[in-house]
Amino acid sequence: MDDEKWTIKLNGTKSPLIGNTKNNNEVDDLDKIAKEVGISKSDLLNNNIIKDIRVKQIKIWHLHFINAIQFFYKVTTNDKTYSIDGNKHGGSGGEETIINFEDGEYILAISGQYDGNLDRLKFINYIPSKKHVRLCTISGKYDTILFDMSPATGTVYACFFGKCSDHAITNIGMYEGSIQNQSQQFQPQQLQQLSDLLFPSKPYDFPVLKQEIARLKYQELAPRVRNEKIKFEELTTNLKTKTGGLEDIVDLLLDAQKKAIKNNDQSIQGELTAYKNILERKNLTKDELQILLSKQTELNQLEEHLANLQINEGLANCK
Image 1 (cartoon, rainbow, N blue to C red):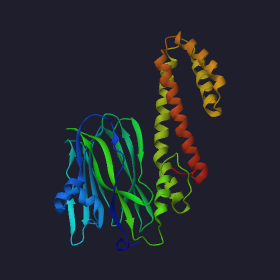
Image 2 (spheres, rainbow, N blue to C red; image 1 turned 45 degrees about the vertical axis):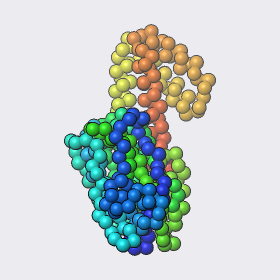
Image 3 (cartoon, rainbow, N blue to C red; image 1 turned 180 degrees about the horizontal axis):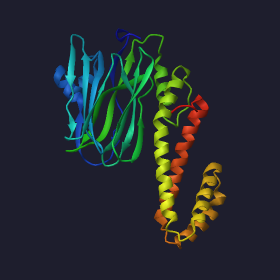
Image 4 (cartoon, rainbow, N blue to C red; image 1 turned 135 degrees about the horizontal axis):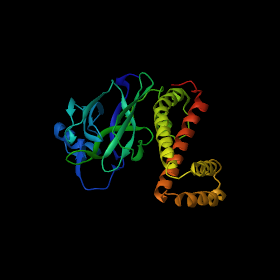
């Protein structure tokens, strides 16, 4: 699909604003675009002024969290094409990462993590001319609340808005743009199918790119599973040393919960309670036991997702 055969036009729709609920500075790149073009923001959204809007580049400053972000755009109106630098939002410092977009590449979905700030960001981009999905991950150092955001069928993400403090990005949102004048090679409804593939709760039902996306997801997830398993084993060992010789009871507790998770069996609850009561009398607190069981549940979910990728896509030999 050539760049000239399709365009992205703002449709007036905004994604939900993802992040914490604190009052911070509101930022909106469409304000900068409106100023550069010389048209009010409301007119840009409601009138047929922008014929095409593309993200050309994203700069992100990050360390423990996302310190700052800046988008760069190519905007085409009826009579002119503009190269517009969005403002740098957030604070200073951190390592700079630059995501350069190919011609025709666009943002299909965004995922990440947040708490007080945005801690991680992942841009899931699609390059129509190559039928290629690209994952651009910016990692902080905190494991916090996960989020996934993808636009409606036939649309993509075109322009950034959000909130920031004096030192970090706290919220992210995106204006949606509709795909126009597409060839028969890539229909609008396939955009939603492609987006669905990128999240574990969605069905794998788009055969053209199914294998590639599954492989990307496997390669991303496998190191995380290994790291989480190491952390869980270290936590288990540390708690066992506090039990005064009742290491076997810790193993029995974990085995019981594993059965409860696997079989969705509530009848094992009494068994779990009995093991926890014994361990609480041996220097382990309720909080320590709850953290241990929560980590086991999280690890089990990650391992199941990884196993499903291997089974469904034949990726057992992926590294």
